[in-house]
Length: 196
Image (cartoon, rainbow, N blue to C red):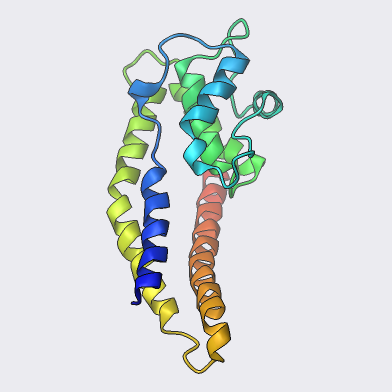
């Protein structure tokens, strides 16, 4: 791998390392008004933005989530820590799932664990899920390196001036196929949850 390619891959890894999940201890212990919620989410998830002017969450989005029963309504216009945890899940899901699919996933969680007092509440759900996800980080880095190297071996017979672009295209295709297949698996699992 050339120095230029090593640098490009290092930049990809740096972006990956910069995307971290919100620790439950980072969540405010007081209920927040809508503007405070959007500001908090904007600050905490800024690393996930593609462009600096992208919005993480807007008032309209939050109102639509509540209207579509993805998010329980606020209590006297204030959102609890559990609301924030639900919004984090919704934020990640909305990138690849329909509102209907998100509702199928979140409705049972909300019904059973939102403001539960049996020790298994939304914080419990969030911590369990994200503990598993954090463990996947090193696997993901190794997998990305493997796919990057696979793409780097393609198009050796292409015109030299096109090779860099074609290899980047190949890398994007490898990653996209992975996303596509996992999305299909997620949708099938959600469909299975819908069956009585």
